[in-house]
Image 1 (cartoon, one colour):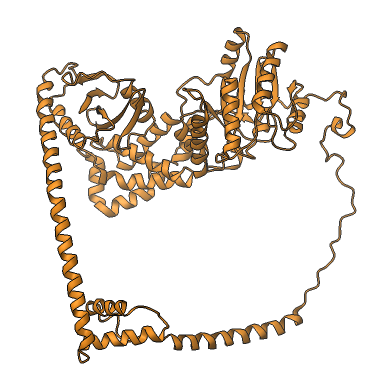
Image 2: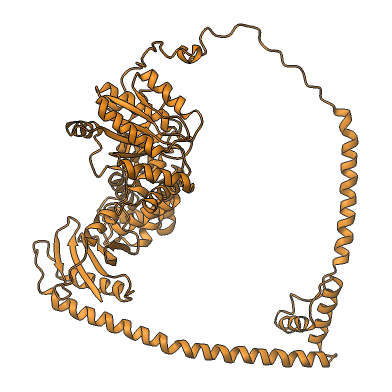
Length: 618
């Protein structure tokens, strides 16, 4: 039975809800649908599954893009109602006829909905009964056909074995001789079946296949190739190439090539290290982005060619001037295909590019096209709005404000850096520490990578350069306990922020993922930051989805802690292949909080959403 059916506007105003159903929904399935699907550009999906304590719902929806209406149906997932799609279509058609933007109450629609629901349920019952009646009939027919074919084949096989003058049986004997010469071992029945099947395809089985001739040809070819290789091997010694000795330059090297700290060389732990002062961090610089003046014809050249070929020059020009009544799927396909290909060339995962195009198509289908605009321009504008909506953070990402709020509560602000191997967690942790130091924040590092050799020494070097304290316990220790003791030490010495460095791990490594889940559950950090490369494409989806899935599955808490933010590294090496940022945000819902764009401490900046969207679209 249907639990609820709601009609509301794109702005969130509820126009009508079914009073007859009157079922109190557990949880907030419709609000979750709006946040997780409609606002995140996942509206191209067929349905959405919502899990609540004690129940599980399936939600289906449809849009009326011209009027800006959304129709949502909710029912128990275990029921598998077949008439929901048809009912939504009927409700959409009937309600659009009585809709008035000035009205907010539609009590007169109750009777219409009851009639529509009865018609949809009756039609579904008729289809179900017709399938149940047709199923046994089809099985009997299949049995009769099968037995008839078997009897006929046996009868024809027997006659062909007796009669030697039949042309078809002669073909069968040729086939049998050919299979025997080809050393094919099989039963007599299989040869007879081959004779029967060969009756219909007699042209394909004319003449037997002689394997001996093929072997003779292959042996001759092998002799020829051996002779050629022998000739080549004899001619090789004449062409000996003597390697010349390398002449090394005796000129002295540059005056300063070794940048290793003198503390490490001399082993003097008490020596003073010059603090790293490399200028202002790029996080505090306002990046100015100017819009270019490229024409839309150059941007959508490929799509326009498809559209011109399909409809002709005159019809396309007339449609752009006069506008079209309602856009349908066939009109949108060429432009969406061009946009999908363009997103994939910018390193966006194929699955995400396809879902984005489906969502844009769902938001434009049935909408009236404005005059003097092309379909390609309409699709591009809708895609730009969708990308901006995805990449814009849904919550505040002001870490400095959160640090001061934690300081007022007299506890340190804890950030845990996680990610796969070799993405640059320790280096970018030092960049974040450098940025926090410029804002007069007391920072302490926690060396919780007790797995990789040299990880503690690497973090110790950064701590000396930045002149900040570091908490370490060496190797082969439980990282969760090390992080807990580091937070306790930071509370005692008055540190404002604790930056926890963890070991790099692949998303499929269960022992290391279990240790990471324990660290997060035991210490409850304020921010779980996933460090990922901007170079990855489809692998970004797999990494983030499996990290979140593992953290949820291996946690002992009923409300497991997932990834809160993303730090993109190596952003200066990708040119215009910026699609990994979109893929990561889309799959996890977490915002990009930092972007690493170099090898020095100031090379850390914010993500410019407008610049990313413009790069993806152009």
